[in-house]
Length: 242
Image (tube, rainbow, N blue to C red; front, top):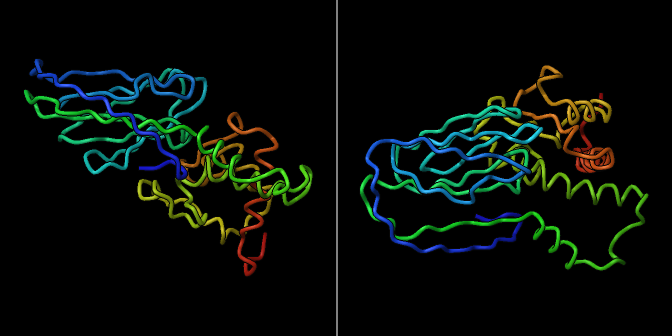
């Protein structure tokens, strides 16, 4: 699994015999846009409570075959539980904060752990790669429309691509978790004012999908303006804006 073409693997090897037969509850907090644990080993039947300790919403989910789930957006102080019912590796993420990743390794009762692989991915690595791959001469003037589109493409890639997809067509990796599906932004007929409202306030506030979170506290005014400029640049020329 890669994050924007950059991945860093750290392998932790150990051998530990399971000593607890009865199912247990574990707690993993979300604090400062991080999981309190990078990796956790549990037995089949154990549960994990994902508690939000940040002053903004998180949306914890997994697309792993071992356990596919979506806890939806929930605010500070709330916790949601996931019970792991078969062995395997579960990669867990936050759809709102792409840097948040952890692994839950689910093992059969009373079996030895042969190896535990922990995947550490950082958005900072992506930013470093972008910076190192271009020179100053490649960037347009800061206040130009071209610069806004360029910056907006990065905001979209970092915050929106997981649901809306690489091509902004609503076919992101997490799209299968949602009904209704994420919007096809290439074919959107919404004007910039509407886009700003739904980005700031979220889908539910505008009687659209409740799975579209509000970004007002997460993105700066410039980032919101830039991503709107980017969306305008990729909109199909056949679409008449309302």
